[in-house]
Length: 260
Image (cartoon, rainbow, N blue to C red; front, side):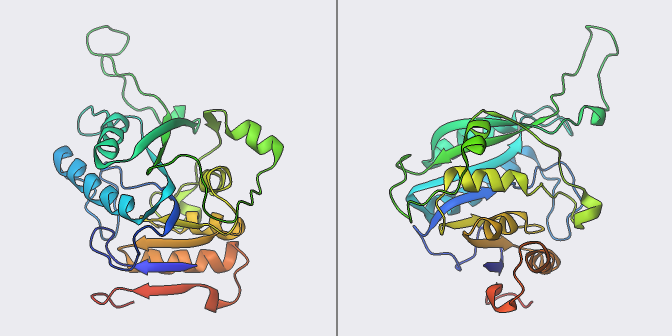
């Protein structure tokens, strides 16, 4: 396992054509209070930022590499925007090929706080309590590299190839990060779209959930984060939740411009 304390757009710590699977949930630009990221920029700047980091991901993926992108369906805070459609379009412009989309039903209907014009056709708001996991790939969908060993069970395959996934989100308080996703999300992506021993990357590591799932699934994991505190949190979670008790198994790679 490797944790890279660096900026996803400028880092030189990841080699090109080395990654089998990317599983990530980037910032949503909805004014989340991160330590070292401005999550309230113009939508145009957000799309430009998204294009820049996705271009790096495209370079890092193998020709048969896959990309699981967890993003909102749309954005209501600060103006209505079709985030899922816009980021998918940008990914395709970069060169990614589209495979499918999973709808993640978190069941958070209680979070709805705005209906626009109440019980009136004047200006109602429609809010879907779901998120997307857009499945993309680089050049070839059929995976020919790697160990060819799959560890997915029959019942998991049957359930997870259904494009609607229903499970609860993760507690910010329990994890100690403002936007954690549950281990279940990367675990499903990893077991469904990679072989045992493959290298899985999360360019927005956050609390380290993707690396925890990778370790639990016998995959190699690399995570990048611009925040020192989150890198330390991810390292601690790997020790506590992924049965990695030998600290030598968790390497923290520092960029030459940063000190951990």
